[in-house]
Length: 352
Image 1 (tube, rainbow, N blue to C red):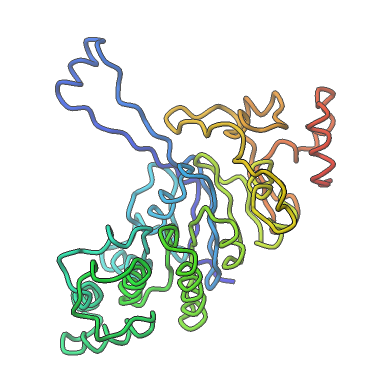
Image 2 (cartoon, rainbow, N blue to C red):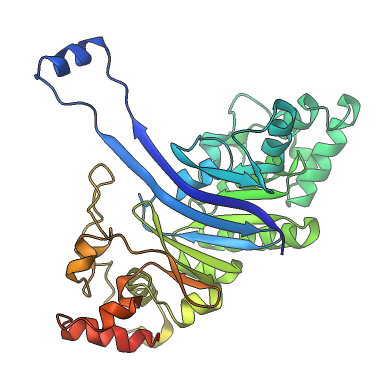
């Protein structure tokens, strides 16, 4: 399959520039420089044309930041994003415009992402009219077509966003994204704010659009059951890094990384009705001061001394399945300092 998006070593840092008074206080030693948030730390990712990639992780792991970097909304601090083989940071103006139109993002909260002062007809029809994709006289027909495609009554085009339910507003956001004929959609927690029954309807809509329009999706979510249903491939993130990546069936059948295993252990299932569920033990560290080595080692029951010092590489353990864990290193298997927990984990993974 042809690559649609390639992310190479992308790092994103957020720094707040101090004002004049703060700079003077810092120089005088009366204040500390503003903290730096390490949102992304050397992320590699590929999305092939026509596939759905599910991006999963706890809140604060950098999923949404990565989605915005891929969509061109945020520039990376380091690394680069290739759109169909072209670095989006070096594109000429006309090429950059085409790349932006071809990549659209659908946000989590449709109420805050839709202009409350504009009618639905303006919200959906503005972009194709401004970019000259549809003649002005044909915009109303285009709006009606898009509303019908996403399951909305075209006669509601003169209404305002607040006159719709949450699920309907999300459909308006999807129609707005489709209005410029995109090839790639970044769905940033786009069903998280909806009721469960409405979530199923929107997921089915995404699948229909993918099939009918040949769309490529980066589906960002913290709901593993939804990701399993919709994704061809799953990418697991933890504190700004990718820790595991594999086809969806492989991730759910044979998770390799301890963090992925911990996430999957807590998915409610019918055969676990009498079990008490809990979150992954420990608190996710602050992205302002991430731990050295493997970011997951403070919460990992299988952590070794090397985990506290050396960042594990995201390496292929079996074809199409990559994981960033020192337990996959043959040298770690021969370490005399491995405890019973590590030995048990190695046996569970069953990698050579």
